[in-house]
Image: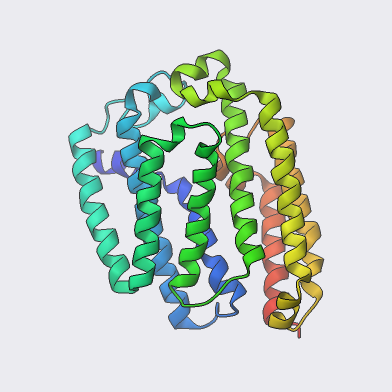
Length: 292
């Protein structure tokens, strides 16, 4: 039971966010090269562990506040199912294992992973209490994941694609803040004080800006001369409708279905959204790897 509660605290559902690491190998046209693929998978595992460790630490720090939350009060540490001492020891052991593994994989990758880990710790202890900076730090974490996926296999990624990952992360983070603000209403202030510095109207404006920016950035990426030259094809522009549908579908779920508080759950459970992501991935794969 103790082991099960530890796994739950590592948040396996959240690991889906680390799939962004595979962007590097996919868009570098190296996905079918075993050595590159194995390194990327290893990087994915390391980031799953590091992000899980951050969740453990975050739950330790926030355990009293989480007890006031209708959903987060069920988390193992907040509910008293996982002793704080056990959680601390587990976090230390997993941190040492992850960072040593990262260093053995690649020293540049190690420094990116370490930067991510330190940044996320900073978020848990400090940055999440600062309005606007809280969501920017979350987005930076996604950017470092994307960068890690390129560093581990020593390839470069388009600046526009890199920007897309940051904007998409901002979109998800701001949408989550909006859901928390609406869902928790006045009671949310005791759980996350930074929510008191936001308003639904302000977050709606943020979402509108980031949504438009994401679509524009991805569109520019698909038609950029460097992209056309790299893939010897102008057909990547045909994938824009799938990205557009996915973003609009997520907006629909936020505003009409009042979802968005758990992005990973939405991305893993909403069938139309899942289908749009799969079709986008297949279309990108076919265009990049098979159409000249």
